[in-house]
Length: 67
Image (cartoon, rainbow, N blue to C red):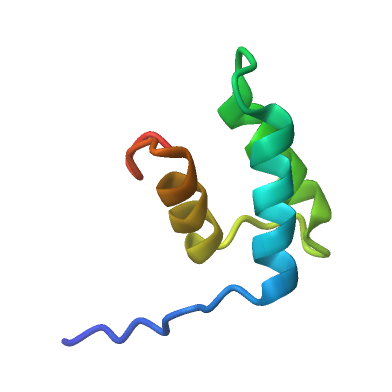
């Protein structure tokens, strides 16, 4: 059985929020956890999408498997 995955696309608002959150937490101990918490809190459903996680990984340089 073939699985089909819908590619999510982050909108400009989500990217801006993530970029601001990364800039705010950058260089702090436990930065990744703070970034994930802030992005999750901003989501109406308190959900971290795969695309958000991928974007956080790419922007922070942290391997996706660690995010």
